[in-house]
Amino acid sequence: MLWSVLFREEVSFKGFLIEMSEMASHRLERAEEKKRSGTVH
Image (cartoon, helix red, strand yellow):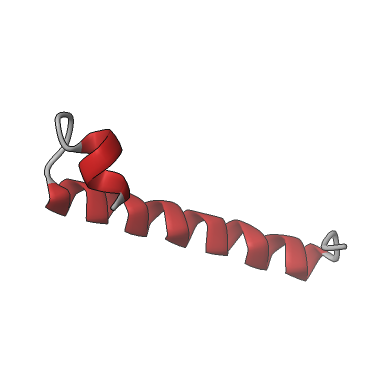
């Protein structure tokens, strides 16, 4: 698991999950914005 290899010393597992969820939501929002503006290739 990525957390146990890279982030265990820096952040709790719960914090890691929250961060990953926020990042995924942000990426999805950006993809939807590009889709609406017609810049998706």
